[in-house]
Length: 345
Image (tube, rainbow, N blue to C red; front, side):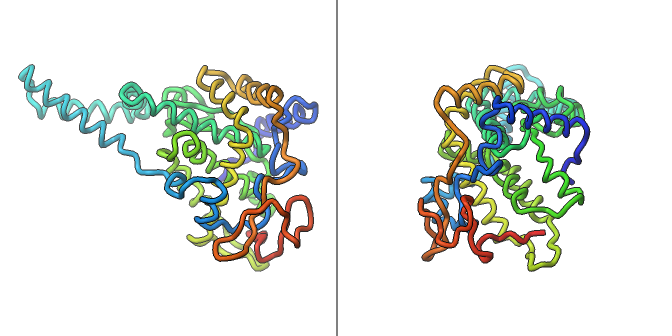
């Protein structure tokens, strides 16, 4: 179930909106909110070929690959144990037993934080990928007008932060955001809207998009994909022509979300880089938001006043154009009922 509203979350949301109205948070809700369009408008049908054309990336780049961290770690430990056994005369079976016991205690007591620390030492690029991955989630949420509650970049940080479960956490890194509209809709206070589904999709795919942009391939993000699948699969259609989110529709929504996230992160690159720098320095939430806004002011990044382009269902794979669809009814590029896919709940 999506986190319910609470007095503290409502107060946080109201604070963000108040600062936005005062002109202090110019990029909060810069896309998809307050009459600002998303980067890509028009049809929500995004084929793999069209996604590659719009993002200038291959589908492989935007598809998280299975991580081999545990396998590599196991191989390193096995070699180390063998060398230690030969050089000291300690029974190899005893060393294996001690290693397994230590690994279990690490997982049970500190959520694998010790193993994660060792991984960061052996693989320095691991930390950089986590950093840029979470910055992608953070900035997408912020640009879409969803208040960010916090961001942690390691298991140790998650253990000390109650927002990520504290001692009971299973989180190794993450970004916590809150969408009041989605929360109220998921908890039955009003019908679920397509706009809320779309915001969640873009934010969830923001980490994968960030890795693909910065490293050419997303290593992490399999958990994000599964979160999106679980979310969409949990939606129960309620008449009015609404249809179930089957596997093909879920895949299309993931492609659509990844496309929007890539376009957002590229459009606001200066703010993204400033956010990465603030997170890397251990900045708190306020310092991260200040970094975003300061970079936007210095480089002239503004809220979107028009889409970067439109997706049009034309030809075999669809087309990407800067010309609004002929049947658009507003600056948001709304199209016919066949392609707007609005009836979801």
